Length: 154
Image 1 (cartoon, rainbow, N blue to C red):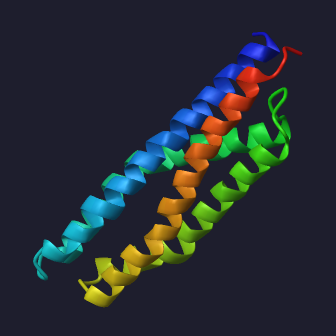
Image 2 (tube, rainbow, N blue to C red; image 1 turned 90 degrees about the vertical axis):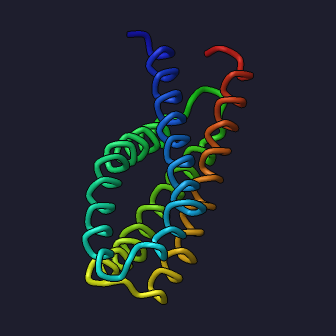
């Protein structure tokens, strides 16, 4: 496959994975997480464990695709794209993964032991970090496509 075609697919796969996660994170932030408060206290640990297993099945593969393609784009920026843009994108991926492991995973593990409104409030508040970062990343992927499409052919 021609190098230019590989770059096209790399950019498109990265953008698609990012925008899947932008959609997921906004649904989690404004719909799903707030509804946690409506699950009964007795049922909550089982509900939370089921949530963790189901959401992980959905997001882990997409996050891995996003991270690997972001890494490849940072190492080999598309023609005409300032190298700082893919590196900023990769930095946002690292930030999102860090927030996931250091905040959300800890809060979900705590909630799996039993509902705690303070932990849910902390989950909602700290998840804004990922929501904003993924939204910026999504816009950045569109910016990279725009710059790349206007660049003269190599």
